[in-house]
Length: 393
Image (cartoon, rainbow, N blue to C red; front, side, top):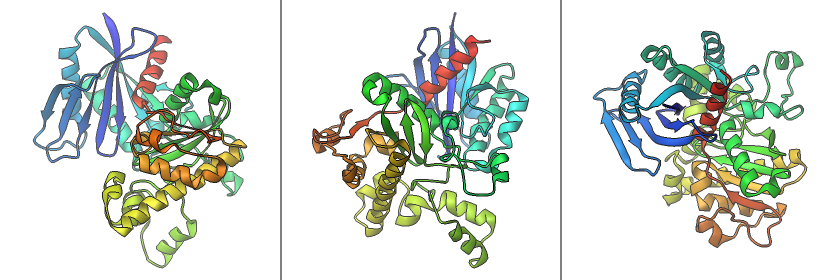
């Protein structure tokens, strides 16, 4: 009997998952899918590694815990892969705080510590932890493992990690943590495989999607990133504002008489591409729109991204490589092209034909910066971590 791990990657209204065989050195995908709770009738879809439909079911009403669909998924796994003993469930947990720099088994104590970090990621942390509670109810003896988006950035040191506030707050853990670490970890590993000449140089990875951030990479380690204490900082995102003058928040509170809760909702749900365009948080919709506000939102997105690449280059002491990943980074050639054009002064030249043709390397012959597109795979990264934890048990 071989062993498998189930990986859950919880988003704001859906959970991506993958089942991996961990018998070999490298985990092998057995199936993948989506638990979509956004629709009127929540839906579970399971597909083969090649994308063929294996199973689909719907529930008539939404379940706040997602328990019904998780139970359906575990039932499918048992029926379809009965000879694959399910050893553990691995979870993407957005915030690990100062204590967790690597994967950890989810005990009651660990869970309580992670739940206490919710104020640092109020949009994400509860969604990441909800399936943990549900699976405890369904299969209380099944091992669950937390893998953290912040862990990859534990290598960041002062001054990049520091806020210019009284030091007593830093001693309480108020610092730059960074996020999207599971994605950056995967891309850094792939970069070492396909472009080893860049692995020891100064490279910026741009994870661009509904959530977006940059990572300054040197010798395969994170030395700077655009997100900070929370996932609000840095780039313009789908509905999040990114970097903002703190005085704006004081103004909204003092003069617009907005409550803390209203401001939080504004920053997380009403800002970013959606707020600037007034049309959509979806980059595809904005690129297809003829509205001036849509163009202005896209322009701000590419402006801020290019600006922050330059900031990362300052930390790194140069720029040798630029890697695009994430939903927008992998699929939106126009966005890659616009960012590259803004970075021409840094030696970035993007070959239009390569960029439009979906090639891996899209830098032009006269570019002093290697520009690549590398699809990310957070689920595989989590599966690798889970396999490593289980080997030590």
